[in-house]
Picture (cartoon, rainbow, N blue to C red):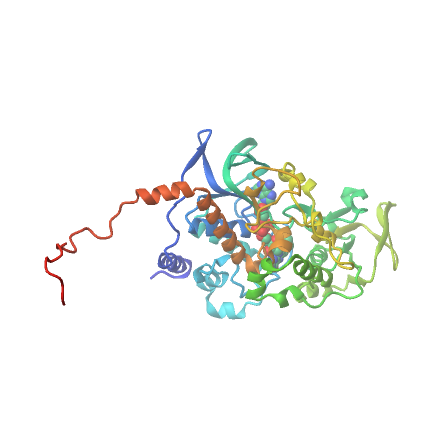
Length: 480
Ligand SMILES: Cc1cc2nc3c(=O)[nH]c(=O)nc-3n(C[C@H](O)[C@H](O)[C@H](O)COP(=O)(O)OP(=O)(O)OC[C@H]3O[C@@H](n4cnc5c(N)ncnc54)[C@H](O)[C@@H]3O)c2cc1C
């Protein structure tokens, strides 16, 4: 009898067979400079890159996903994330692409049983990473780890060239389409207040940095922000033995309601991309202004420490290094800190993404063509790429960048154009499936002459000619 994961994997194989997946490869094999050309290259093999690779494999399209991280360490989960559990509820189907045996729940129950599932509150962070490793393994996804994409070069001839670094060597690869699936900070990096970068580097970090929290033992730590990452950073500092942690929060109250979660229904997922600009902007701006509350368990993980201090309605006015510490002047008075963590989120910032430097000047952003109504100005939204129907970058008005339309984006900054299908767990399958369909469709349409010729050459008979006997028409009229 097989049990546990082996049984699940057998069931998954059967479900895939029932669905006739994956489809056989139907795109033509191509070569350039004697190197094979892949149909789709994905930059990033985090959850999004994996889900998209799986959806493309299902559609019989050749794909390679490159990730600079070591195998099993893609994305934030086992590296820079510091929460104990996922922020999302456990029931979400995540990257399962509609296949029950590919869900986290199936994977969890196969190993720990139904009672353990019922008892589980939220998914432990590292367990989610283990699940993603299994997902990749069981689907045998074509991922190349340790490969950093350093340049994306669209060309006139229907190919996109990728320049890569791996094992200290530089190399090139060619694809017909490229998808940028580089995550939350995917088109930029940390969003930092202007004064942060003027501070001595040893005295501050962004919440997404690979910061050594053990070094904060005994120190007075400030955390700027009040979102989930602020709580995770504060809790990690407290658990590492920080003397005090001060949360410096500009708002006078913590956001309490997750409006984006409340909006989540299949209509929102499927219909958002069809909305006119003004509605897209209005929805995303409203969610930005309302802000996403930190999870309750993450907030309690901080507040259970007596040396955690929540300061609301506080704006930082200036910071200077003085007598071996940070003298911070705030709207509520001065405070002395040893170390500051900016849990201030991410922004689109092409300079922070060298691989995009070549195409960035051509890429149209929302600020290039949309002016929000007064009162709805939003710098984050303004910098978002203005993507086309196939999630492709589009050139600025009056500019030509041949091949840019072969570079597609499925990462968080695409959310204003596409909705919530761009990388978070709740709708990542929809994003991957939609984009995979669009890419398969584009690949087909581009090769229509070949596919038509294949149809003409196709000669497998359905009937053999021995199923009937042809008769001449009778000489007298048929009266019956
Ligand atoms: C701390 C944290 C907690 C989160 N928790 C949740 C949650 O609970 N629920 C939820 O729905 N969402 C959550 N998110 C948001 C989102 O789901 C995650 O960011 C998720 O990892 C997105 O998956 P992704 O594949 O799009 O990006 P990532 O997982 O970030 O993967 C991107 C990959 O691209 C690779 N890469 C980047 N640049 C290059 C390059 N030039 N060459 C090669 N590879 C490159 C990186 O190495 C990385 O592995 C969280 C985000 C963070 C940061």
